[in-house]
Image (cartoon, rainbow, N blue to C red):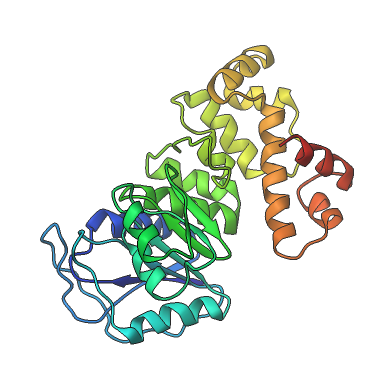
Length: 293
């Protein structure tokens, strides 16, 4: 079981914390922990929070996340910043929501990397950390296990993306459905998972079919079987699916396969083994589809 460690500072925003916490508490296989330099932790919304003063032991499989705080507040002592940097140095993932990116910058994790934050804080972040590349008008940015997101509710998108990366789009889709969250689209940022890019619709028929594809995208899924899941004809399904997502069911399935294969390749798999793991007979189709992206 992986640990998600939230590092809290006074005047933390509740939704910066609660959004990702809800995602990871809904997804299987996570243990949530909270640490702070003092307790109780006052929030900007007036609700005091409990937290541990002692850090748990973390491994490379664990996630460290810094929620944002009210502008003008938020400060971590040097030992906390060192712990944040050390977790990344040991192979762990470090993430932030909103103003939390400033803590990552003070820990030295933004230098030479792409990052983002709340639109109202982007200019300041760029001035404070000139060695970083601040990406504007996106929900989140991933760069070498440093994951930063924009303001407040975008922490949910960030967390769903991390769940999709670690466990596949099917798990992330189930979490999103459980939370009654449909992904928001941002065409300028390809780092969003396909689940987030193509769930921004209200067709329950299409969502049911997407759930089926997400759960078993590496398998052969004949259109007739998907139509049976939806309770409509093959022709009607193709029309509804394309209208809702901009892709046919087959193209959507191929997108999931390519996205998962790219994740595997990025973590050391060969193109051939990644292609077979996601359901392609060999790497040729994978290369062809990647070239179209």
